[in-house]
Length: 318
Image (cartoon, rainbow, N blue to C red; front, side):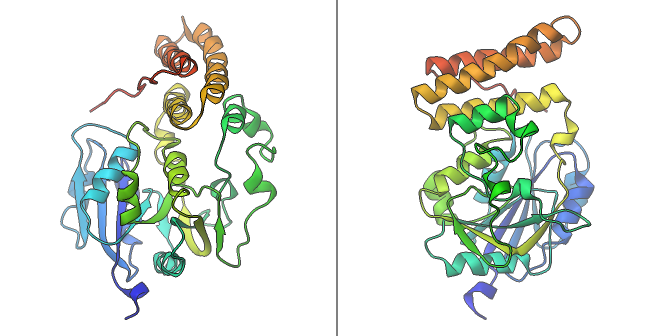
């Protein structure tokens, strides 16, 4: 067999409280390049481990406390030995041959730092342009997202490049854009060289940070002929709006702290504080737990503006 046809990929799939969904994902991982399927259960507290245990070719890791996506990806990667790693969300269903095609693409482009396929809706199989490779965000783009520009003007010049100038779908493209972390193939040597995923993140911006660092190694390969159906919302749908915001702003502030200079940290911190303050007032009496989320955002924003370490807003939970 050619090198691209050998089992050379460890697939790492984190999951939390989505047993049926991760089972579907695992059942679609059938390509010949797959060496192992590693499921990391992020303290679900349900029957996920029992349902997956005993499946041929599946290794299940159960984390005792919830630690988030970046931590789960790293723990799963540590268990494999294959030269390639495919990080895959539990709501992704690869089409037959999608993993093999992605592997062949990365192996054909020695200078690429990562490879990503095309995410499509189920059942329409329309391309999910919101998950297409997009520009790595700087301070202005992060602020645009924080204040809602992206929500009301998706094709804006700060964050809408992937919608205004989408990459072609009939051929592979080397790009300096950041692929979605929901389906990302990398070389194990590059993953280890970077020190893995940054575990300060929980969910949101962990993939932006990871791909930004991978782009220092080489361009990303977008292979649209490798098709992955993406159900979407498996994790975020479990949380109410304040809890979604806790994770989103936590990732945003950590990203600003890691990658922006003093001016960038100041404007991002100021934007986050501007968003948090009225919500603290709004929820102070009606929903104290929501108000507490935005107080944490405010303190994190102040720390970012001061140039200090941004505290974690994500308590470890069972």
